[in-house]
Amino acid sequence: MERKKVLFLDLERQNRQVLHEIDERLKDISRNSSFVCGKYVSEFEELFAGYLNVRYCICVNSGTSALLVSLMAIGIKPGDEVIVPVNTFIATAEAVSILGAKPIFVDVNPDTYLIDPEQIKDSISEDTKAIIPVHLYGQSAEMDTILEIARNHGIAVIEDACQAHGAEYKGRKAGTMGDMGCFSFYPGKNLGAWGEGGAIVTNNELLARKIYCIRNHGGQSKYQHDIRGGNFRMEEIQGAVLGVKIKYLEAWNQKRSEMARLYLEQLRFLEEEGKLTLPSVLPHNKHSFHLFVIQVNTDRQVVIDCLEQNGIQYGIHYPTPLHLTKAFSYLGYKDGAFPVSERCQNKILSLPMGEHLSEMDINYIKEILSTRCFS
Image (cartoon, rainbow, N blue to C red; front, side, top):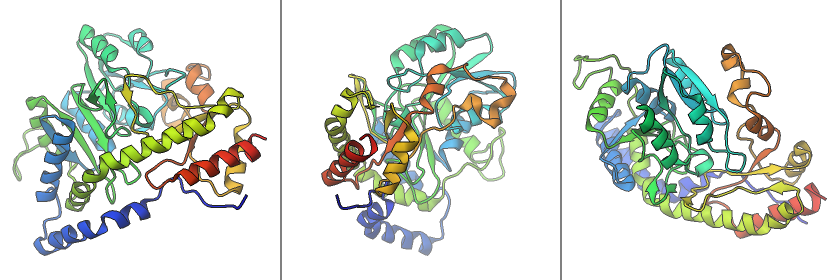
């Protein structure tokens, strides 16, 4: 078989599709010299709020900032506890620890890799102030159960939807069900900026007002500082880019879903042979397939080497559960504390995913996996 190259993600191709529209906006920004939180940021806030059917969208400068500002808005302080999944990108727990609060890690469901609601119940204490369910890889967590747990204990729910633009749970968009939802517009996301970017969405007017203040050094006008905040403002260029790209989000997500369907069809026989495990999609969820994550049931490094030799890019999301990272060693967790996530760390493998893929690409990946990687 002729060797070809399959990119994990192809932003250059995506940018060619939208460049002509974005160029005009960049020229306008240059002419008007409005570079931070201008009309294009405001426009995108309205567009994204409309897309999600929420009242408020407040743009910030990264997904990490979105998480941090959301926690600040509900008054998280040293001594508080916030429940987070142990299998996620570090930013989820990082935002908690920056404020001096304690991240309480919870293991995940072995089929979906999503936070396990039953283990949330067992992790709540009198110091628990919030839960951050992560809609990982593009699939929504079990929100009805999580929201009920939160209501019963009087604690907040901040959705980490940084990987779930357009994903749905029982017909509701990810990020819109809790007290707040946090999004990242890092370039590699389903909806990505040309740099860093993030947003917080909410239907709560009081929270929205507080978030607006925190974003801008704690004030609503220049040199008026009512509360402690910081510089979390979005650059105008990112608002301009996102205002164009949001028009393509549904089409891009549809293409991702189509590529995921082909993967599931083409690789099913390898799962039946016990060589890999395919992603599990909950029946009430609409998956946005930010990532297509399989489990390798043989030697993963052999498969990785094979993919590299045949021009297929890959990722591992994530190689180390958060409790075993050096950054959180102070919490005192040991090997074996979260067996599901620890087992996954040596098996999970992300295959190429994005609107740049074609049926020929999926066929090629299937052939390489079946005839060379698992032969």
